[in-house]
Each structure stands twice: as structure tokens, then as C-alpha cells.
Length: 280
Image 1 (spheres, rainbow, N blue to C red):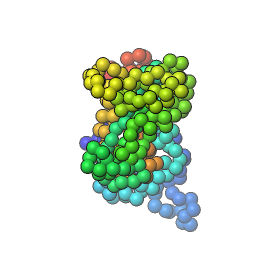
Image 2: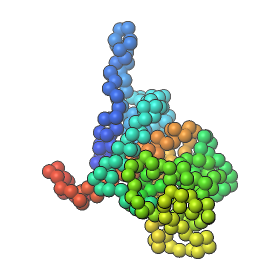
Image 3: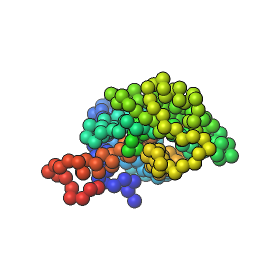
Image 4: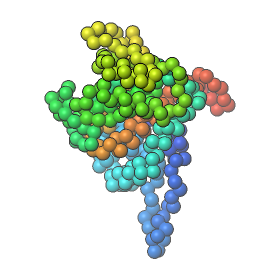
């Protein structure tokens, strides 16, 4: 069973491969020039996508052609080069250029997942008998496209994470003058409103004690994006211990979430010679 359909994995790989430096097939420093061939980057990339999608271990996904050590070493090499972060940035910029980000209405919310192995961004979960868990403070635009996130332990409250999460807006570019931030009742405090006012943002915050259907506000987009992230089993039950590795997987997941929306909306908005008869 493929981790992703071909209409999604192929453009994702094309952009990812364009960010990789040129490497020789054989190691030029070998005295006889006959060192073992380098495992193709596409093979390792497919393995990482499978790890992200299915949540399997590196040893479980390794085979006779690509070992678990090769997958980890190539992953760390690409993280050092910043390939995953650049992939997310390019994907988001392409969406903004072709479709347009709806930045007038953004949403911020926290989500707790399991982290059985502990690590740098793990903490006792208040909703899982203090087992190790991870919280992400996520920010999305009006259609649910992920803009940025902050990773921390599950025992952190949502409100103090608002400021570092909103700081991610500085990486996006020109912002509209009138922006509204949609939040749930966990942010219903004077400190949150002062933080938004200091940034020139309007806050639409659900009041504590007042239950309302999620459809009554613009927060349902972020709830849907949280469910998309949780569908990646590596993020739902995270065994990675280092924050830079988890961030890399989130950047890859953000690109996988953004590209289908880009393709489907571009299919509706534009016409080109090789446009498929059906929307993917």
C-alpha cells in the first residue's frame, strides 16, 4: 500500500530533489574508485514518507536495499542542510502565489499527542494520567493551511504559547492591516487580549462557560488541520526525542497537507494544456 498517491508524491519529490545538492554515485575519496554505490535519495525519501505516514520504526521499514542507519543518516544530513524547512517555505509561497493565503482570519490552538519515548519537547500529559506527551501550538490561515507551530511539553498551557506562535507570522511576508485571530476558551484572559492588542490584531475568543458549536466560528479549520496532522502516525505517537527531527517531520507533513489543496484549487481556478480531466 503506497504511503501517498502518485499525483501527490511525484510533485513533492520533484521539489524536494531540486533542493538537494549534487552528489557523486561513488565516493571520490576511495583509493580504487569502486566504493559501494550511494543509496539513491528517492529511495530514502520514500522511506521517510512511509515512516511519517505509517509511524513504523526505522528498523521496520528498512530492507536489503536501504538500512535503518542509512535512513537516519540521510535524514540528519537533510535536516542540517535545512531541506525540510525550505520545502515547507516554498510550498507555502507557491500556495500564496497561485491561490492566495487568507490571512485576514487566522486561528491558533493547541493539540496534545502522545510521546512515549519522552524527549526534548515532551512532558507529563494532564489528559493521559501524566504519561509523556507533546503539545503543538498551531497557527493556520482561513482555509486551514498550516502557517507555523511551537512544540513543547504536554503540561504547558495554551495561553503562554500564543506569543511565540504569533511570532511565526514574521516569516510569511506582507500581512493585511486588519487581521482577526480565532481562539477557543483556553485563551479567554486579559493577558491574551493585551498580547493581541499589542500586535494590532483583533481577537475572537470563545468565552469560558459558554458552549457553542464549532461551526459558529472560524475555528473549525484549525480543528480539521489538527486531525490531518494526527493522521500521520509518526506525529500522533511520536518516538523521536530531538526537537529538530520532530520539526522536520512536521515541515514534511505541512507540505503534504498544502500540496493537495494547491492542486485542487489550481485545477478549479486555472486552465493549462496538461490539465487533467478530473480534479485530483
